[in-house]
Image (cartoon, rainbow, N blue to C red; front, side, top):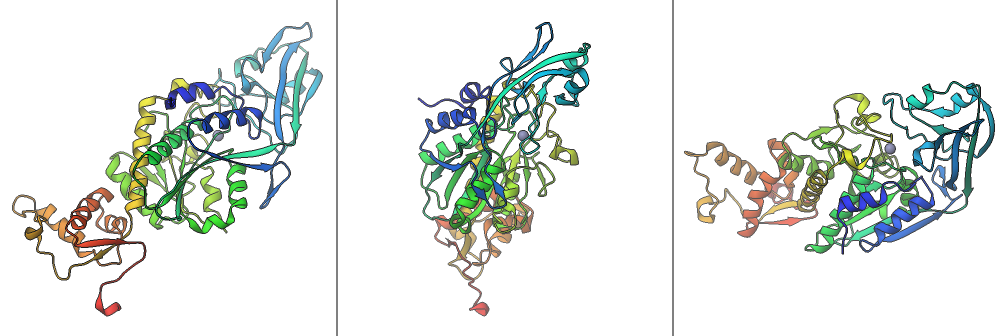
Amino acid sequence: MMATMMELINELWLLPRHLISPGYDAALKRLAAELPMTIHEVPSGTKVWTWTVPESWVCHEAYLETLSGKRLLDVADHPLHVVSYSLPFDGEVSRNELLSHLHVHPGLPEAIPYVFKYYQRDWGLCASQLLRGSLKEDRYRVVIRTEFTKATLKIGEVLVPGKLKECFVVAAHLDHPAMVNDDLTGVVVGLEVARRLLAGPKSFYSYRFLFFPETLGSIAYLSQHEDLIPQMQGGLFLEMLGKDAPHALQTSFQKNSPSDRALITALRGLELDAYVGGFRTVIDNDERQFNSPGVRVPMLSLSRVVNPHLPESRFQPYPEYHSSLDTPQIISQARLENSVETVLGLLKAFDQNLYIVNHFKGEVFASGYGLWVDYKTDSSGHKRRFEIMDRCDGLHRPADIAEELDISFQDVWGVIAKLLENDLVSLSLTPQPTDPHLA
Ligand SMILES: [Zn+2]
């Protein structure tokens, strides 16, 4: 019995899914029970390009008390009360010292912020502004019992084999304790898309779905699979898909790549009010690693960032971001379902985006093949059909035509499908120019 996306979220969201941690491992193990998944493990201390895989971190206990023993906050009540990767601490502190280690959310007075210090080596607690404002005593007791251990960074991979070994990568990050939209929504949408592709007809390209801790997971996977990088023809990072906002598609570093063109022109046919923005303008995440020098996989990202056109969306994508208010209440199963359909539509266009090779010469005898559009009743449809057929010359892919004519991928594909049915064209992975001057 497969769990629904919301059931998985409700089951996993409160786990302390810190970067490398038992909570993260438990969540990945649960996902692996849903469909065939390979788990790659990279040990702490391993050099992965310019980075080193950190140790695993766990918090056994963390609380703040008055000296008379009144408990003011306790990590047992919420996993965000401790700074992720905090050093252990046990002692009495002055109010000033406490305040320099007690973090609050800048914009949400009642929320506990998500704070992580992977490399600063410091101790810290997190509270609401309201609690922090109520601290009037001179001295307090802090207990933080955390433990760093050598373990492994774990990456879950679901492979949907296609006719080609060349592949498209879909990725989402599974770490972040007790948060939902960032990015369990991307994880469950990715998992559901993988499940549907596995159940459907065999695709042309292969599809690799990756679930990992952010940044380090991408780098660890890529650095351990350098042989696969040349096969990666494109990618899509999924994140923050639960809020009530249209989809926002961020282009890759190579905005004219076939992967970019196919996804951008297909989104146009799927959602009229979707937003498209340039690389590093909408939201920053693991797509950066895939697009980076020496890797250069054209990976786009799909989200539902609330104000994608504002420069601050990259660091403040929605009001509840990185706080205890990022809960199942701010997302909905209907929006997740809609995102699954959108991703399937984008991947379908990527899979269909091959060179169109004409078997015909001259203008096609349209009415003889049921391809005639009457210009008296639909003059623009008539013109469009011929504009598309004019470009079927072994040098254009559907997305190239869609971009050139400023129409959707699906509009172009509608005509190509009819030409394929009539055996007037075929599809090719490589350009096959039919202009005799190019032979
Ligand atoms: Zn985040």
